[in-house]
Structures are given as C-alpha cells and as structure tokens.
Amino acid sequence: MLCPYCGATNRDGSAFCLRCRRTLEPAAPPPLNYPGAPPPPAEAWQTPYYDRAPVPPLAYTYAAFWPRFGAWLLDSLFSTFLAAIPAATLAIVLGFAVAASQDDATSRFEREEDNVVWAVIGGFYLGYAPAYLAYHTIANAKGGGWGKRIVGLRVVKEATGQNPGFGTGFLRIFVTVLIGVIPFVSILSLLDYLWCIWDRQKQTWHDKIAGTVVVAVS
Image 1 (spheres, rainbow, N blue to C red):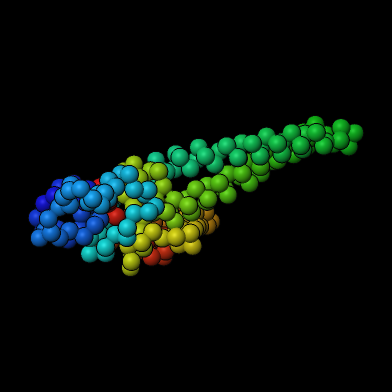
Image 2 (tube, rainbow, N blue to C red):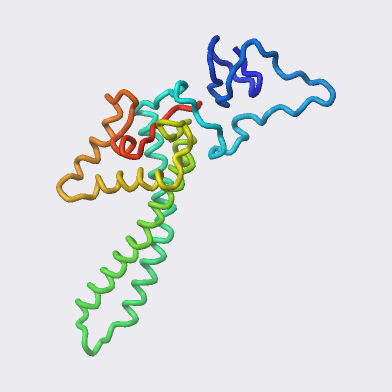
C-alpha cells in the first residue's frame, strides 16, 4: 500500500503510514494534480523533527536495545563535545584567575599548584554539567537528540505519543544521571539501560519514571 501523502510503501491494511504517521484510507484515491489542486503535504524528511504529528499508541514500534545503544553512543559523543567547549573555557579562566591571585609571600609553591588544579577541575565541571543537562533536556523535550534522529528513533509520551516536553525531558535525563552518581549504587546505571532488553515496552527505568517510550519512526 502506497501512502497518498508521502509515497512510502506500507503493508496492506496498515492504519498509519510508517514514514509520515498519517492515517491511511485505502478507499480514498491519492491527490490528483489538477488545476487549482492544493499542494501535497511536505515529505516526512522535510518536516522538522520536533513538529511531527503524535505517534498513535497502537502504531508503536518499540525500539530494541541495539538501535537504542547506537543512538545513546552518538548522543553521548555529541553532548560531550558540546559540553566540553564551555567546560574547557571556564576551567582555563578560573585556573588563570586563581594563579594570578596567589600571594607569593604567604603561599608556598605546592599550595599554589593545588589551588590552580582544583580551580581548573571545578571550572570544568561547572561548565560541563549545565551544558550536558541542557543538551539532553532539549533533545528529550523535542523527541530525541541528533543520535536518535540519525538512527531513526523518537522519544514520546507513552500515553499520548506526543513529544515529552521540557518538564518530562529534564526528568528523564535527571533520573538517568541520578542513578549513575548516587554512591554505592552506580552499578544500577548499567541495569537501568539493560532493562529495555526484557521489558515488554522496551523501557528503561528512566523511561518508566518519566512515562516515555522510545519508538522506531523509520
């Protein structure tokens, strides 16, 4: 069955197009190119990722572990690279500021070195953490970061199929980070990601807490 809107090939009897997610009506003829006819809808790839229509819950194709792992790896690389820019900048600025403020008459050389090192480390984390959280919050809110878009996955609200929004997007990444940094339970971070292997809806723990699912859209 060809979608009359985007031309994608779907299985006979499909209720929704796998590419553009529009409702399919097999009995309806495709739009004709007659004078004065309305222009056809834009191709799915031309539609902004965050403006796509909600994914109908009955049409969910839950993302398996390996596509999710590939998307996570790509998003980790993108977010790390972007967050490293403000992190390195702030680390250099604070390092030079502390080094310039040292009083040679009252501080020993070893103590000066320690202060500069701690300033650099502190500046790096102060620049890295907000940028990292911002990337993943915005990505989750809009349906997925660059990694998920490349792999062909999308994060949606489980109940409605809509993009999660900023509140749910922040909750999703906050839970992920929290599980990974709490002392003595960091090993649970691995179990969090592996949970989607045997879960019925292929959800991780942070998916369940945020009420989201990851679905395939291509």
